[in-house]
Length: 166
Image 1 (cartoon, rainbow, N blue to C red):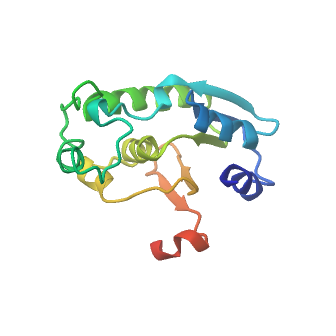
Image 2 (tube, helix red, strand yellow; image 1 turned 90 degrees about the horizontal axis):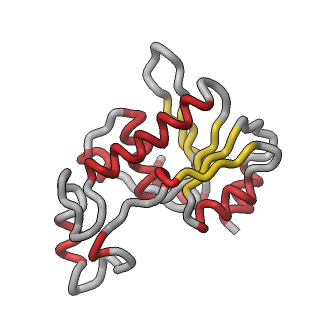
Image 3 (cartoon, rainbow, N blue to C red; image 1 turned 180 degrees about the horizontal axis):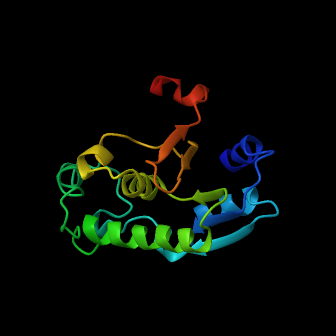
């Protein structure tokens, strides 16, 4: 349903390309919305590996408190996962790949909550503390305008679901 809503929101927007993670949720959404645009899945856009915390809710009494302390430590691989620094390098590689393919135009990236936050962090030059300070819901849509020699401009679509963000 969220993918269909996104498709409706993007009606009339000419996309030059659509990129997604290789994970099925992201890829399935991109399949629904890409229309006539090319669609490319990049492994570097997959969600961060959370090691021993993978698939466990943050409210889990056994691992939740520990997880709340650890994911923002730059070199902590979360016992078999991916460190914040390694993840940043991987997502930056995806952004660089996309920008090399498309120096201009309208590009849609269909990602995951934490990965989308990392994309914003990289493009806007945010610190990890700033990145921690916001969430992104599954159905939120951002527009980032990049122009050579200028700071990026960030636009967020406000809907009934995220009116609190005003």
